[in-house]
Length: 391
Image (cartoon, rainbow, N blue to C red; front, side):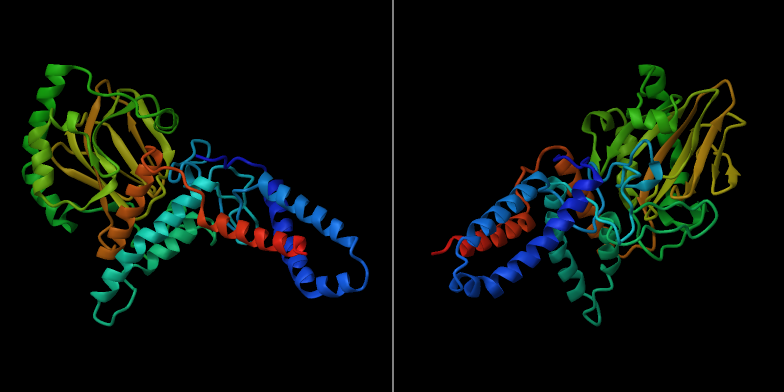
């Protein structure tokens, strides 16, 4: 990924350069013929020098555009600022009056997003009663929020801490009831299949779990670890081969799985997860209790509950939440992330595309190309250069 860590002064310099370029271009087009005809041909050398300096300025900061926020690793939250979503450094203001930066790779990403969601928007627009774009309008606002083009969202309730990855207007409450979802009832009825398969693997293989990343260890604590069946919409073929019955059951229930994932999670004894928010308000999280010692707890938005073996606890993790296991035994749950029920089909399709594309970028599956917006700027520079050097 191209550098997105340049100093804010470079962004200010680029804003100044854009203003200067517009002024110079207007002045040259308007006054250049009269200046030359008045015998001041020597000033053309000054114009050429100024233009050369401007080109060098652009080469110093090629990845900058006005009024956009740094999109570090596209969707990865920063360990130092877990609430800020895609914006990592505090010295970048997220207000619309500041100039911030997108790297060339990030510019390429958002251009590819624009190109990819247009046919999705068109499809859902054609299939609405009044041919409206209401199926996907909120995704456009989501994109502006992610790029820092609008102010970040504010919480809807106490301890609600949404990030820039936000869909407006969705109901927000710390806990949801399993009875709100048809698939949840069916999953609880057949939960014994998952519990048995999990316990069999735990006895047979011993340690299944490993920490996800340094960031998660810092936020989640060293006592939390996961065994992933699915991540970012992709099933782990090696891992699901150990849990074929669980995999088939989850697939059969038509759960609206979101991009974040499905995993078995372990909370070691005498450990807990610090209070934090996952930020994304359009994803809900279900925990199926597998092994639940008495005394463990989860707190979401100021409300504290526990888990129950074979039952689901469903929460909105865009609220501040934390967990604790003060017992002498490990706690195990199956975590299922799924789409908020108030998302439209068009919004789900667009979000799926955006996050799948993000996966491809992070995996190196999308080769680098120069952003089209930078080509356009270079074309304007070339036109000015030709005008200044024409005989």
